Image (cartoon, rainbow, N blue to C red; front, side, top):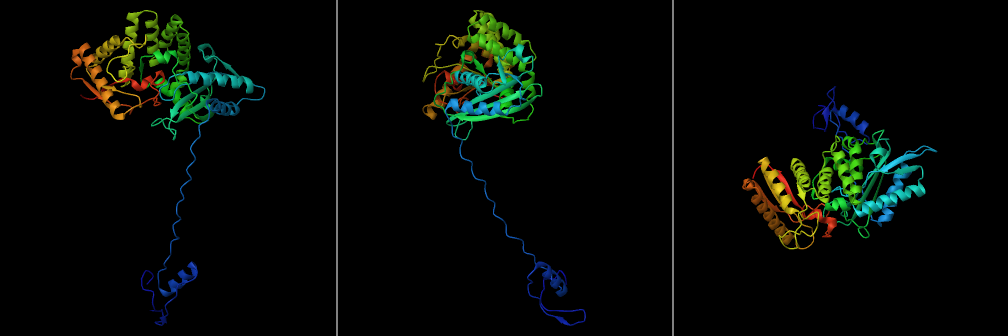
Length: 423
């Protein structure tokens, strides 16, 4: 009877009639009475509580660049662990764009402001040059990224500000010890790449640069430092010195530093190969420069994507050869053709454009430019016929995305070469 759905009158043990039991006021009383009556209790579940969605946080409001730098840098310096009456040596591994890894006029200005702030308000930190000699002593290191983003903080769509990330890492402990973030306005920012990055012919996703970016953007205080970044810090200091020497037109010194960097365990990286090409070209060593560019091509194809700054005249498929260091396109194409042909692989040639103007026109123009480059490669290496595919993507794969159409976003107008499974 306990499980019977019937809850009316029933016969008791002495064959007497037990009257039907009304619903009880308390759950326990109801159970007892129901058991006596031979009825199963009906337990009502409490009504579900409606889930309340968390409030949407307000969008981050960008501030002028100097204020953004002051906010992020102060957060880092004020929270970094330094004991009373102690002094801590710090070096700044030059800040970069968080997508491309390029240094710019703006990132140099940010670094200068950080140094000035430390000297005026945080004298417990001794900022020293980022050099192999200082790095070998195990200082703390500051790294940072400065990246154009949309209103949601994403590197896509219309860029509406700059996301600024700054961290301090303890090399001896191998972990992040302080972090600051801020958002800067677009106005007043000079994103023109410094000389070395302006002149560099090629770009690809580089493991050493990615480890730098991740050290800033993908860590919180207390997290371990990327092993790739930690193991490559000495090479990074040599590359930084070489970039400074190149920008100062000390091409012989820069070449020596790039040669030294290449011999280190972390020397297999694009900045080194670009540097070897640029310095040899500047010094008039044409054969060595061409060989170095060949290594650039091999490195890019090994990483399955090589973006080359082959720039075109506006609205045409004619090369823009006005720049001294971005003009030797015949040699570049010859090396790309030869190195690609030697692999016997299928290569996708992709044209890109900046986001300004008509999207449909940009798609069409980028397709025509890719087809033109494909034809040039097949002329240089006839064996590539049947191994190349040309495609245009307009501005869909923009790396910078500001639409400035100047030196600051030259990478958005690159031609990309990618190894694909089949043709």
